[in-house]
Image (cartoon, rainbow, N blue to C red):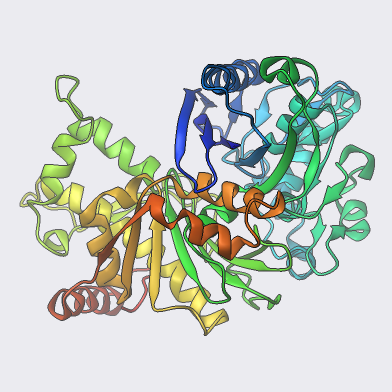
Length: 494
């Protein structure tokens, strides 16, 4: 049996899976962030420590009760947050989350080097990534920076909590803006450029590797040491869990943010630096990644502001009903969903959301529909850029994440993209991807392909294919928008 630890932005999950990826037990604990209009986005690591202990204790209790032996703990996590820690792995300050934008000015300062940074790292310099946040700590929190033994993310923090060692894998390293994705090592050139100390970074191992075995409190929980594997970043694992195994396979993970990933077996830079190129969850392969920084989070804001009713059984009940009462195109309403800055293709941290063409004739129903269409347009923009760079992309888009569970959202995506959209029900894609990685590494299955095939019985696929009429309607909407010269949003052609 394998335990998968999935560390998200708002919660942590621990799932116990058998040899065919059936989930036998799932523990989940939510936590909160401290977010301010100044760009501040932090997390008190004491909340995380408590959550990590709680979910592992839950799984360990289940395993003991059912006489189950765990052969590995597979770790996947959110990426690019920065936590200063001492030599014992204890946090010296809150985590600077990936959403934190206070380093935007630092990114502007290094703008003359943006092409060199992109060529080496595959990422366009942005406050999303780790390096600018590390520079921010050094400049504006010098005491904390000086005291820190390492500057690490949630994956590395958890690895140390479980095993007592500092380590990271190539997929997480490739999200720092300090890692050379061509020779898979920390870049001396970029460390010198940013004025950062290599000693504060972790040793790097190949994605999917066994790091070490559990020690201390984790060993006591289960009663024996367990190998810990670093399966890779959450989005990379989601791609693997969606069956992205071959070059050209493409998926969208629709959660707090939306991420569009396509698998490739070689590094080919986008000369306009619109995409991130990261190490994938499969050793020897990479991903092209487009990012929509606000997707589910924007929908949540709209729902909480206009629709949510505490007396309803389901928190999105009214929003869901309203979105179906508005026609294709939301009666001309356009909703820019980039509330927290824009990722692909512009990477503009100052971008904010807005509603276009609002009139007295519009209703809340139109707002609900327009939000879902705005998310689809943003995802389609990412797909368009990926297909320009990687012409062999598949004709099917695999989707996962909370938003993918809404059939209307999947229908709209199919219509805007002119692709079949496949949503897998059952086990979450990120958890499945981490399981696939470790099941192959531990020898439970011969390869990631064999592990995915073994898990097929745990998955039910829902397929969405928009009609030609609906595709034509959205193509016309987008063409008219482009003709009107909307400079606030770079629309895609269907």
